[in-house]
Length: 273
Ligand code: GTP
Ligand code: MG
Image 1 (cartoon, helix red, strand yellow):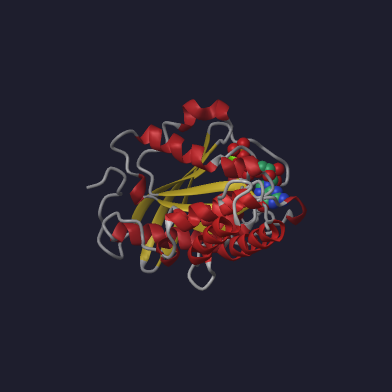
Image 2 (cartoon, protein in one colour):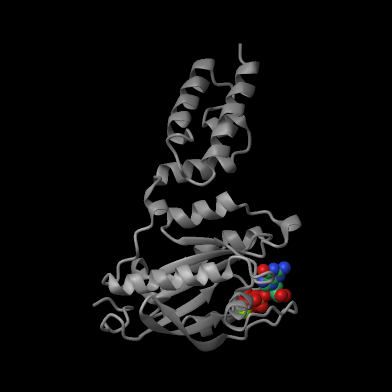
């Protein structure tokens, strides 16, 4: 039996699970949990000191689930406290603030911290991850859009939700789907539930969309050297068009990436004799 699987129980009987929250300081981890458990929002920032612990009961299908929630402090200062709490976890709520690019870029480092603390025998494959793109109510400051977040999450087989702890948007839906997925995982012998979206696009498509987003000019976007010939531009374009055409590619952001590639090709061909 896998290390982080809870004890097997008869269907219909109660199940005890452990979930943790993860993500940079101030992204809204505690507020998301408070919004779900206490139906309220506190606008004043009260940094979590180390870990906050709570127990709650939820019903999933015919099962009663006892949930132990460990709400982690995001500040690097609390690393030594956090690292005790990663093991034996069935679900992770991984949060970033859509108005703070740093908090989105930090998601990989959070996964790395968890992986490191679980050690060589720890298995991240049998943990359900729910990524929360939080503070979507702050539309003016938003700098990480939905397709970018969704692409990151779904290419890893994680659930993705747009949330606001302030308005409550997306919170119940997130927890319900999260708990159902954890129960499915427990009932499926510890295998993360198959999600359509995680299997419907390739790593190459996801990486290409990310590369296009981050490209510095049209040459870079098409992946050709500045000064390339018409033939080279057209060849590069065709390759990307086949990979990203919206009829063929369902990866989040593929439509925008495809449009950007079309525009880049048009702009380059205008200036090449
Ligand atoms: P640490 O415990 O330090 O790791 O931070 P945290 O991630 O738990 O953040 P917390 O939940 O304490 O929220 C940080 C600040 O963001 C607080 O001032 C909250 O009121 C605010 N906040 C949290 N969620 C939202 C949201 O969805 N929208 C808006 N506008 N503010 C939010
Ligand atoms: Mg907190």
